[in-house]
Length: 310
Length: 252
Image (tube, rainbow over all chains, first blue to last red; front, side):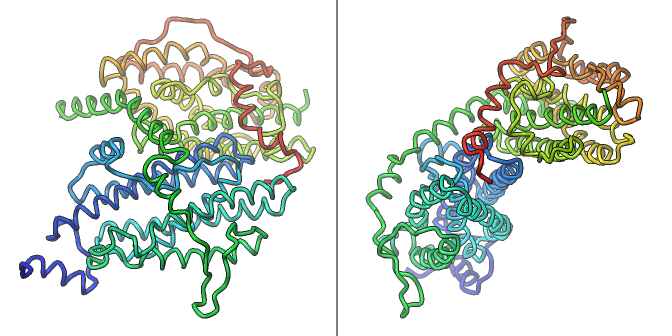
């Protein structure tokens, strides 16, 4: 089959690194791929508010509480503009939330792990947001305009989040033995799930083919994971945290670290619903969405009255 | 009562109210009826937290025992807290939070207007910054009162219920004792007596526009000026102070 004229102009634009905008022609699968990816990204920001929100009322200083609250608020804001970016593709926020609740739409697996101690707040900021940034920096050049622009804004805030997470870890590593223990324990629990955030190895990645051709994706899972490891290992060493990987070593030839085997069986378990918090996270989101229904109805009824009285 | 002690207590009252109010509002994180409200309520929580930090820091300076804002927030017990009772009541549903916000923000917009004229420069500075914030808090609460009060039968009844439940905690905000008297003489504190009719007028007008009836009850609950609280405060502090209490030598 020869490509049609409109497809050619779409692919030409992509090849010339021009952004695709909401009113431009785009292949249906491009649109669907983006809806899946952007809504997953938005849901991740929103579900991620739960493990971090778990520590707001127990934050150990007023400053720590202020930074954490502001950070979580940023995440909610990211969720908002990602939902808006996805809406330009012809899907409503309400539909996306329905898809989340039905299980059709996913969110990042990482938030199916629990935040057990205050050090987890450090680890989430440093490792989870750190891994997210690596991915998001490359998405600033993604081909869909509204998504790329949302990423530029998000990246600015995420680098602040990563610094606050690292600051928590650094402070705890300078603290009393109980704090150092807590920090290392959080490192041990979050390191591997953070590596899994980049998804399966390139050889096993099901969605990559068109994503590269359409320049939605710019770097492969393994490339991004490598970048994250190389950036993070020296940061851990600097504050005295051990990386929980006995096979981790510097590879002079590739000028990067080699790492041990990722536990893909665990990854598959968590993705298929058997992580420690999958049910809890979803039940929480459903519960508060349903509890808020009467408020949304009141808001809608009131707006309607105002419109009618104009 | 000397002026230093009076000012210290006065600052604790203001600071504790902001701190506990912030705590309750922060409980909305990931629980809002829509994402926008999640953000709005935690934003108001952040404003309150910033105010609490400034007021408690200054209280520590006035006390002169080198206690920081964190020492005061995390290392006092429930009988040494002086926040208004209304701030510590459980979060409740969205209508309950909005009614609370209306009563508190209407009071605070009057209070901080007065305090921004205080002869104590530090307090006046904090008040001027706070005033900008609470004006927004009041608009936010007022607009939601209209939406809930006039939205649906259900939302109206929930807001009415919240207003009825909270009414007996509104009188305490205007209580004055010798702490206020000592500072009033120096032009530092706000005279709350003339604020009460203004508050009543403002709140009555908003509730009327929201189709909500003013509660008839005249009984007003009291206690916080003497550090006598509801049972809820102890649980807030248990949660809030847990890490500081469990690891007293740690710096976070």
